[in-house]
Every structure is written in C-alpha cells, then in structure tokens.
Image 1 (tube, rainbow, N blue to C red):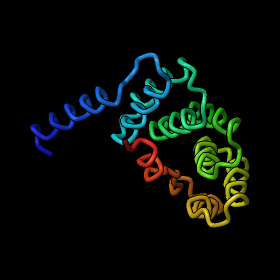
Image 2: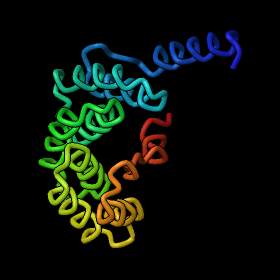
Image 3: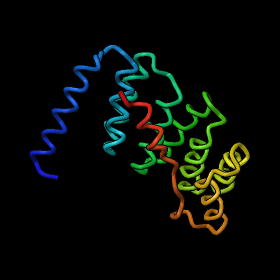
Length: 161
C-alpha cells in the first residue's frame, strides 16, 4: 500500500466518524472504534477503546470478548483469561469465547481445564470446527497448533453502516 493510500484511509476513517456522530461520552461509539482497531489488528488500541466503553457503561459481551482476543493475540494469557471470564459471565453459551478461553488456558498449561471448555463449546455446537480441531491438537499435546475463533465476518456485520 502506498503512503498516499494510507493517508486516504486515515482521512476516510475521520470522515466516517464525523458523519456517524461519534460521541466521546457514549459507550457504543467507543465500542465501534475498538472494533475498527480490531480489524486493523491494533490490539493495544482495541483494549484502550473498549475499556473506555466499559467506563461509560458498556458492560457487554462484545467488550470482554474482543478485549480477551486482543490480549490473546498479544500473548498476555492471564489478562485474556480474566476478560474471557467476564464475557462468559454474561454469555456462557457462546462457543467462540469458550474456545478462545480454552486456548488461553492451554497456553498457561492448564490442559485439563482447557479441554473442558473445548468440549463445552462442542456440546453447544457439535460442528464448531475450531473447537474440534483444538481438542484434537490438545489431545496430542500440540499447544502451539491451537487456533482462536475470530469471527471477523460477524464483526464486519456489526460495524457496517
């Protein structure tokens, strides 16, 4: 990507925020910005925006899910676990967060506990490919071969205008 294109993209984001009515005192505005950062894999900014969303009253599943994923990508497994637990308190039947929680647990060598969460995801959705793949890898002690469920397609749907 050329420098000119990068500048155009930055300006496009500013324009989008302006016309979308970004409100610095609104939790959902910060959640939306956090999701844009997530799409760009700017995980430290995701965390900052989503924590700001939470401070403004945005205590919801998405906040904790994306913060957990961000910490997992940053290889900060204890924080990933902490935020996944907050998300699981809100929605204990989401296969993706259960899978990712299992990955974070496996990364700190809590193998049996990780298996429990992969299996729980599979009990909820027996066709959850990532959880299925991860339980197979974990059974052969291939911790490096685990995958998180990212749901980028779902994320794109939630931030479309």
